[in-house]
Amino acid sequence: MTPGNVPQVNVRGLPSTLQIAQAAIKNPEVQEMLRKLSEYKLGIFMPHMHEQTSGDFMALPDDIIQVESGSEVSFQSRQEVASQPGRFLPVGWIWQAGASQPVAACEMVEHEGLDDEDRRIQHKMPKLS
Image 1 (cartoon, rainbow, N blue to C red):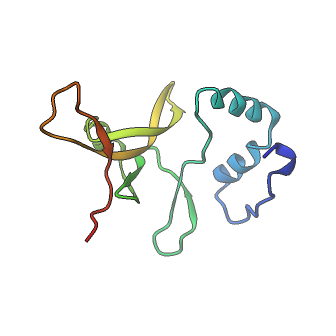
Image 2: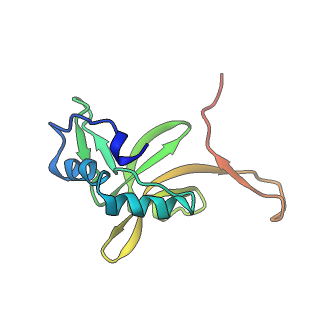
Image 3: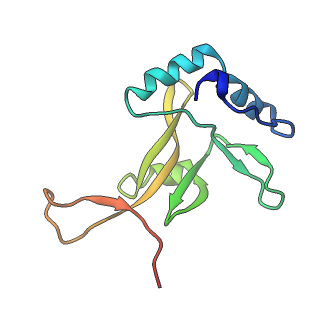
C-alpha cells in the first residue's frame, strides 16, 4: 500500500494520541521512515490496548508491555517482563525518555538438555489437548 491507497479508517472515538498515530502514517516523513525501517525487516505499529468491558481502544500506559504467549495477548508490567530477559523476546519498541523501550514481547521457551551450541528458543505455543 502507498499513502494514496491506504484505506481511510473511522478514527472517531479513538483517544487523541491514537488519532495522531493514525494520521501520522500518511505523513510523507513517516512513510520515508517506514521505507528505511523496512530495509531492516522492521515496521511501524500503534502501541495500544483495549478497555476490558467495552473493547474501546486505549493508549498503552508507559509501564505496560503487550505480551504474546501461547498465541494469546496479555498486558503485563514492563518492569516484570524486563527482569526476565531469557523468558521474553522484545518484538516492538518505542522511543521514550531518550532511549528505546520495549512495548511488545513474545514469551519464549528454551529447550533444556541441549548444550549451548544446539540450544535454541522458540515461541511459547498453546498446549494442545
